[in-house]
Image 1 (tube, helix red, strand yellow):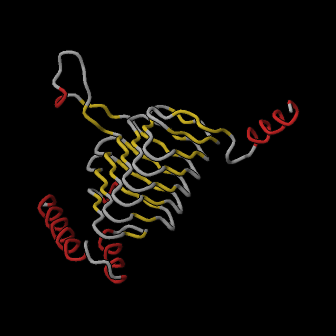
Image 2: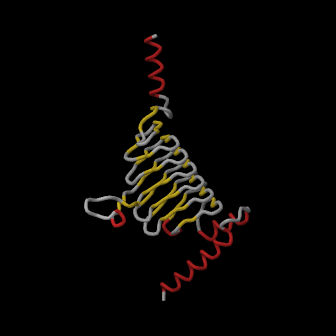
Image 3: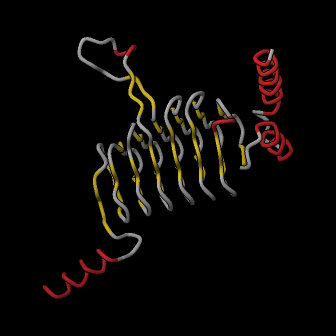
Length: 203
């Protein structure tokens, strides 16, 4: 009986959301937050598969067309962070942790759970699931793809179109496929200042 009641509640919830999902009025935005029970800005055509497995800090935003697949996984966002328009998150299993003041650009793909390949196995039957962690004060540019098991440390910038795999160390700008360091010390100014002093001394 509990399952039937739970299914009925979710049906009513999805039905109510379908009435306001594409409405761009301020009132509809308020209703989306209320219906979903999410304490952040919810723009038009946003889909969160399981609101029970989603948490957001103060000042967060999910912009137009965000799709979060988290039926059996968990997604959390820190304070002041946002997912840009048409961001896709596959955390159907596993966990995605996004820190405070993280700006994720439009079209970004974050893949915690994915099809995989193994010797003698069909790719449709093989999967990989590795948690992803994004630190604080991080800017992920448009159309970046973040692969399973990646860890982005604090104060990192990732250029548009990059493919992230593994660990991106703090206080650096990354770009390319796979992502590599383009510039260090952008936040602290340490390495940039050292390079300037070295260049001045050699001139």
